[in-house]
Amino acid sequence: MITQRSRAVHSASVEVLARRVREGLGGAGSGTPVADHLRAAAEGGGSTAAGHAGARDGAPAPVVAAGAVRLLGADVVAGYLLAGRPLPAPESQAVRLALSALPPAPRASVAVLHGGEGAWLRAWTDWGLVTALAGVDATQPPVPAPVPPGPPVCEDRLPRRHRTGGAAEGGNVREGWVAWSLRMGQLASLALPHLDGPVHDAARRGPLGLARGATRALLRGDFATAARLNRWLAWLAADGSTLPVDAGVLGAEIALRGGGERCLLDVAIANRMLERERAWTRR
Image (cartoon, rainbow, N blue to C red):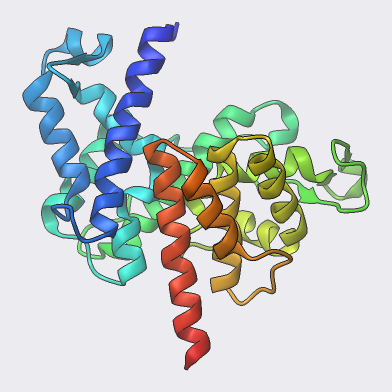
């Protein structure tokens, strides 16, 4: 059973790791955020009891730290994907250690339509991390991670909370933009260069749903969701899509009003992708 204290400890560990990754994006970090995170955990809370109960001396325990790597997913190597640079050996070893401690499921999760949404989201996050790791470190054998079923399709003509489809339509589930955009926000760690798959195809088909979702979240004060969805918009811009809103303006508003290290990391990654898109446009 996950207690409120345990959930808070895991969230705090994710926030610390997100800050380390964000500092690396800006050139202020060590360049090995995952290795630093796991090292701090080992030095601050190395016992098995600490690993399950939480943190000691302000450092996340090893089990919690490895879990933070898995929760952030591909974001832990975002700086190297965005810069097109190979991962240093110590950082690659640290990411692989986290994957070995909490290995991905050997089989792709069930589709979201069949009630397996939590497992489905974890499976996609695992796929993103493993695929991103292979993209920045070709010196080691890839970690196996099957491709899960794709997400539903955003249908602009449906009522915003409606869902329809299924086997009668060849398995293509269609839903309104509210539920669809919230789910895409949970998959924001896949919005990175060199990652592509069914989730990215869904984003290409749903820019209006993403823009609506980001704007709605911003107006409701849900800055974390707004940042995640705006990140998808930035990814679409870098991918060559025409957007119904200005992702740069949205990102600036989120950065001014939002909070939390993971939210700020999403904003920073979106800004880097928009910079890539502008540089490409000027050529």
